[in-house]
Length: 272
Image (cartoon, rainbow, N blue to C red; front, top):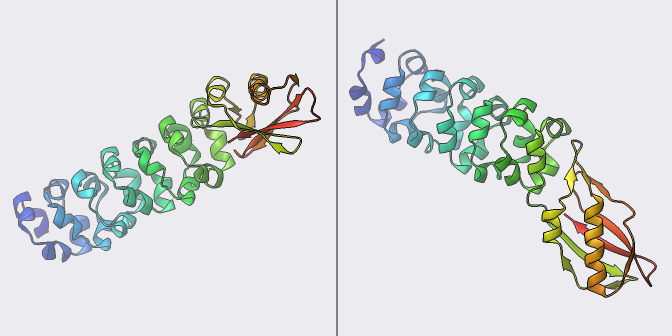
C-alpha cells in the first residue's frame, strides 16, 4: 500500500535496483499509470520479466514510447496476451524496434488488435518470421494489414507464411497489392538455342497478371500477346500463334508458350 502513496517524483527518484526489487504484488496492485509514466528509461529497463508480466493493462499503455523502444526482447516476450491485446497502443507498436517485433511470440502476434497490426512499420513487417505471419488471424489479415504492408512481404513470407485461409481473407485491395513488385521478364529458348532476354517491365505494368483468391496467377490474353510480340521482334520472326496457357499455383514462375513462323516451338518464360 505504501507504493501507491508514492508520488511520481518519489518514483522518479528510485534507483534501478530499487525498482527491480519491487515485488510482483507491488507492481500489480501498487503502481499506477502516472507513476509508470514517470519512470525513467533506465528504470523501465530494470523491470524483471516477472514484473513486466504483472503490470496492469493501463500501466502497459502508460509506458512512454521512448521507454518501450529500449525494452529487451525477453521483456517484450514477457508481456501476456492480455497485456498485448488490451494494453499496447499503436504509438508503442510504431516505436518498437525491428528486433523487438521479431521477438514477439506467435501467441502475442495473434492477440494484436487490428489497429496495432496496421501500425507495424513496413520495414518490420518484412522481417517477421514465417511462423509469425502464419499466426495472424483472418480478422487481423482482413481488417488490419495494409496494402503497403502486403507489398513489403517477402516471397518467403508469402509462400511459407501465409495460409490459404489468410489468402482467402485478404481484401480486394490487398489481393491487388500482392501483385506489386511482380516483375515480368522474358527470355527465350528457340529450338534449344538461347536468345537474348527481353525485359518486360512495361508489359508488367500495363498488363499485370492477376491473382485470384486461391493464389493462382491468371495471365490475361493481352499479356501473352505482348510477350509474344516482344519475343518475335527480339528474334526477328513473325508470331503466328497465341499462348497455349499458363497458370502457377502458390506464386511461382509461369510460362507463356508462343508459336513462331519457321519454328516448331518457342517458350517465353518468366513471370516471377
